[in-house]
Length: 273
Image (tube, rainbow, N blue to C red; front, side, top):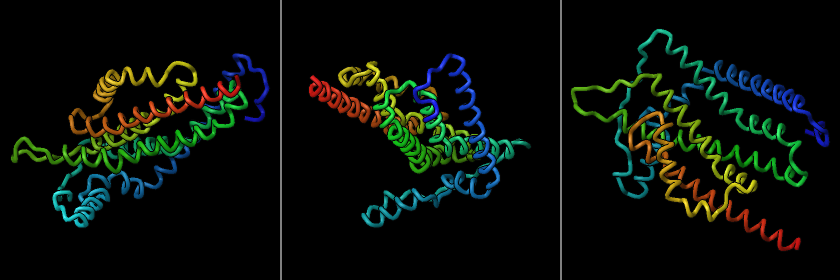
């Protein structure tokens, strides 16, 4: 970052810098993927944990039920068998999970590289709080991933894996379906958790305001539902509602952040004048 500060960049300089950044990101992602791939036992102990009846979320709920003396809070025991139906599927699943988890782990580094690319265009005052934005964005991303892993996916999986239209039909869950749903939901929740940061950035650029967001709150609800219906791997209403609740909460948080940012900006303008 320091070597580029104050330097005039041509179009080709920007293109060359972007190429270097993409190469560094690729190297880090591949390295993380290889490291994750080589730790297969640890990786799949974590990835497959939500399909077990003794998953930590269920155990905590049962402890809570015991403390509150409300047995209904404790989920009933269930069984969900994962199967593989194609010869190369387990190896391909191992590869895809290693890639997804590698991307999740290095996401803060990707954000930092994006910051390095745009930093020459920022003012000195903007650079001072840019690193705080990167940290906040990373925390939001991981919060979305963890929310899905510990809450949204386990309950949606539990519901879908145990739902039967008839006792004569047994549920056997394909491994690829399980992995795709878990990983895509995790990435989706992680990315959509960036809404407060993106809203703040758009407000800074003059594209968004708190009154505008409040005025179109109903439209935002509809757009969020449509977007989730399109990108959610499963099509059931339970998963949709479980995902919608935290995303809408992030929308309300975004309104508060934009409103607070506008107040601070107006306060600075009054002081300067």
